[in-house]
Length: 388
Image (tube, rainbow, N blue to C red; front, side):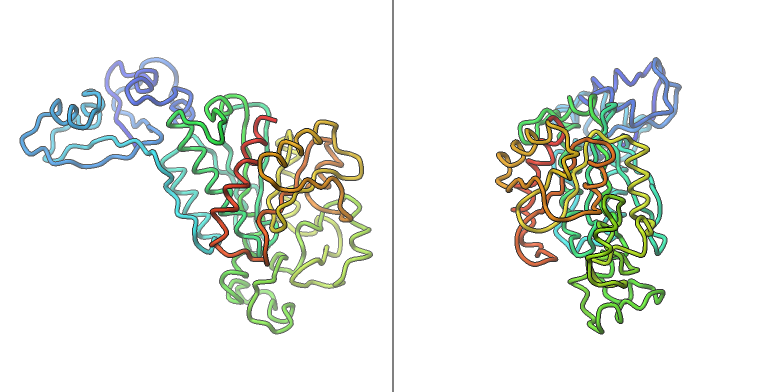
């Protein structure tokens, strides 16, 4: 919601008027300095929308009493008298509908919705996919400690993107309404932690799984790579047939030597060399740039998670794993016979906690009917990741 400032208005006053933490107003309006606001500038009020109400002979005071709002909140929004009155309405429920095949356009549309209503979030491109789609990172919070989450490293695991976007929406509702989520005070994390989310690492592959061959834009013979099968539900790779979670320099040579196939394919091909794919390289450079405190990568399926790599994990990873296991019911697994994953590389390079969470059970892509149960379990891990 936008308002137009008046003489002697301040962000502190707007914070009191709309019961929104001042830090959120400051982050939503980064070009506005402290103190009295210049007159007649637009100011973003996060977590609100406006509704229209007919005056019908009513005064602003009468409408304010009826709406249980401060009179000056109405006065601020109705500085010019019109036949209808703009009424501020607090957003108390999630805005996104994520129970749908969650393709790249769904992600773009939902990020637009959240950025418009919660302008204190930051959305930034960290690179481009093979087909030129922007790889988007969302950041929330002010803390120096940066905790990273990602989804859809694998194309047919796109439900992980939906989970992350639902969580982001729930977080934003909690922060702007002074609520907890999984018994965690969300406003306190905002000032002490920065959340980094890349909801969709492999947008080209996700679109291929959901939309079919047309998603390749005629640039890659995905039908041939898929053995002539026009259904791409089993496709895990990027659009060039490279498994993005087999791309990292953490014993990549072992995976290259033992993995089949030996050429681009729907799954498991680690590429001709490590970090050959722009999506994988962008995620490596992001970790180096942000200096993540920890990494939590969402995959499917198995209701378990992996938290170690070759003994490089720090001691407190074990206590985090126990907490995740207790809260979610997912099984904690320290080591698996696998290399070259993003979590593997992160643990090896930074000696910090990294987790691969395998959401749900079944056959990928998991059906949307599983989403409520998956979210109920996984949100407990996502929140625990903030404070452990």
